[in-house]
Amino acid sequence: MKKYFITGLLVLVPLVITVWVLSTLINTLDQSLLLLPETWRPKAYFGQEIPGLGALLTLLTIFITGVIATNIFGQQLIVLWESLLSRVPVVKSIYSSVKQVSDTLFSDSGNAFRKAVLIQYPHEGAWTIAFITGAPGADVSHHLQGEHVSVYVPTTPNPTSGFFLMLPKTDIIELEMSVDQALKYIISMGTVVPVNNTKTKQKPKKLINL
Image 1: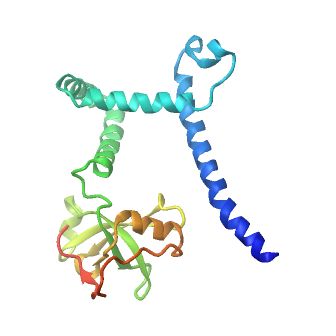
Image 2 (image 1 turned 90 degrees about the horizontal axis):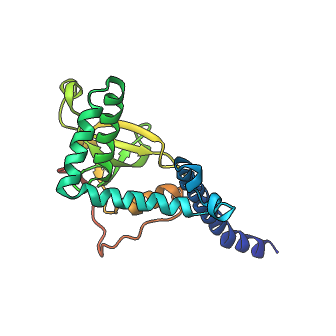
Image 3 (image 1 turned 30 degrees about the vertical axis):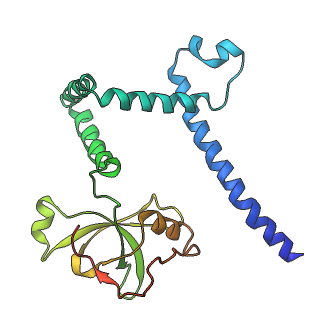
């Protein structure tokens, strides 16, 4: 009896959570329809709301924006738009900060979350997985002795919250696993162990270059 109940949980829990996450995401994206005039909304044409239509509209808007931004005319529009925003005091600081973070996270040339590493945290002898986000800069680097790296330590099971640390480069061990494998390992609280593709067991190596 207990065996069948646990088996049922193992089958249904991932399915229910997946459906819940997708439903929440679609409902959130559907709110984009509120930006349209009431006469343009699906309820005005069909007499009822159509779930998922707002999500499709959002994805289509993102795609079209990307297409426009990749050509010369679109790039000029972006430069003009950013120059206008830079003249507004409060908006300038918010927009520039968000843009720097988004460029670092989503740009192909960025280094954020490109390497999974092993560090001792929150105290010596306790180990956890972190991700390289760069190197300390500005005035911070002047107060640190030796070469340091910036890392992000995600929490479990929600990796979107975590801690930002600056550690000596010699205290970091680079892991032979991808970022996706490391995230799965963290989200699963260590139950989903990444498969080691190496044939021979090698000694962990210190991080060399970012």
